Image 1 (spheres, rainbow, N blue to C red):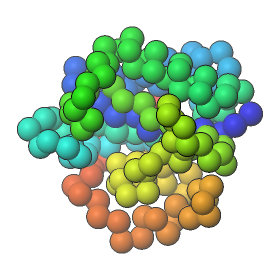
Image 2: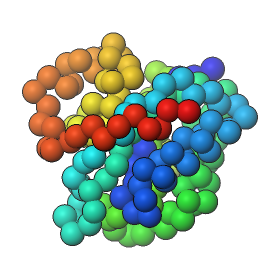
Image 3: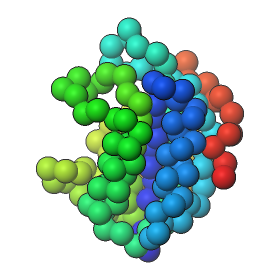
Image 4: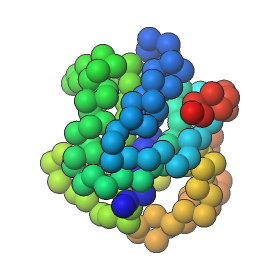
Length: 165
């Protein structure tokens, strides 16, 4: 079994409802068990600022699926929520599910990069991740505690902990 950390984000179609539904869908995966769920956070969009703020969270799970199989299931959950993949990488979206870490694996192929390529500089990933796993050490040896030291929070705010099952 691998411990996996998933970043969740939404800024369209009732984001809190989208994230709650995503957590329920993840919990329903047969080869998966949810371990911890962070609070919901409000964050500013990374890309164009002419879009609503995001709601973000991080979930830890254990799974017997491979990383690619797990990615496929997460993409099905996104698609079922109405996610449309567009050329605009930083645009608004109904649901975004990113595998941040998959055990201590390092993966770099055309479908998946683990650790997630931007996680070390994104407050909306690091702070919810720290909330649920404060002693985490990344596969590269960086500690989460060190990564959040002096991190610009960019207006990140805790909303609530309504994602708990």
